[in-house]
Length: 389
Image 1 (tube, rainbow, N blue to C red):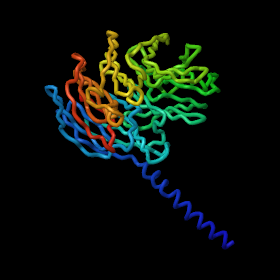
Image 2: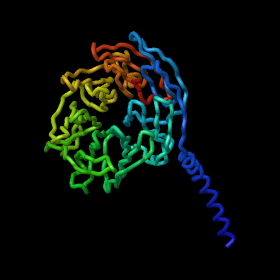
Image 3: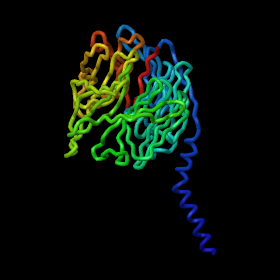
Image 4: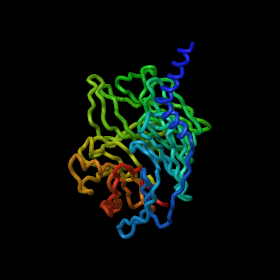
């Protein structure tokens, strides 16, 4: 009996050595953190980075840094995960701290650009698969080997709702909603009646209120020889725009580069395509006035950083070579020109492009670079460019 007691104590000591640090982290990460930052009406835009917030003025095609407030805002804000704006006031995004596995209460962060308030709300439902937004909600998506879920957050970063899948369901890095509907591109497992080996895609349509409810599923595949490889989706008016990075041969499984946007009419779900001037369209953004779409083509795939511009109204399209504008070349430097975030100015005529190494202002009227400002990233990655309105 005595020997058994000693072994029990030893086991407790060993358990505390291995589990203690994790429990401490778990306990610490359940606390909501509130902070403040200074705002100024003189700022035309802000650059949000993991180590703080910079305010900038833009006058006569010159960028001036007005302030730089240091703040431990986030640890690992994944640039491939969507961020959400609400009411021209709130920015909501997730911190994916790389110090441990997913599901350990990483914060959802809400920034109020009117009152200068920050709320970090811990949650186990960080977007390790993808994220999205609508006019009213920020969403995260988690997919596991057997199931997964979509999780709904309000503008303050508080979880308010969720939807659970009962089988493997893999979404993409960004999904969107509008007018009470959420549009969620997805790849199903064999239980759904589709062949997972070919990664066949569908578009799931949810009602947002009173809680997420699946109301329709649109099968997106239409070619007997290949399946699509979507990456992100955006919506403008009655249409959805999805980047098609490539296609996958059904027989050989070979991945072949593509250069198109899939356009889906939300009224009848008929598809059409827009061909871009560069392969591997990846992340997609829209201007505040919904006149333009901006599509990235990453350096890892095309050897330079290209931003495609598509005028939704006129149908005009062209490419901006960011690597050339930043005068960078070579494997080590060119990645610094990859896009982190884009936004449009108050008057809608300027495109604000945040890269890893600089902020660029591009004139959409003259199709030319107006101004640039170098930014040192180092170990403090940039998150978002916020335009004052």
